[in-house]
Length: 116
Image 1 (tube, rainbow, N blue to C red):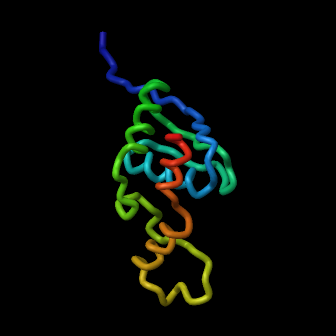
Image 2: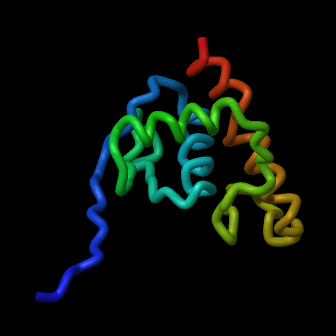
């Protein structure tokens, strides 16, 4: 009889009850930890997470993220950060990434909201 070494992944919804910028930050921070997560639509209030562990393990990972010194520039942002702007085609990608981080992410606010 052959023994299968299979991993079961579960879809979980994470409701941190934070604003859009902070939820987007948590989404990219989880991806940085190689945990699949997504915002189903831009104004969504929760994350869909595919994770092969328990709810408690996922909560521990999120708490670890919140207590970390997260470098926003290490996050796995999209290759082509699309921010609407008249002259964006002339702006270097690194500056567009920096603008995206400044305008759309908020790690300090995420920490403040979730740890208080």
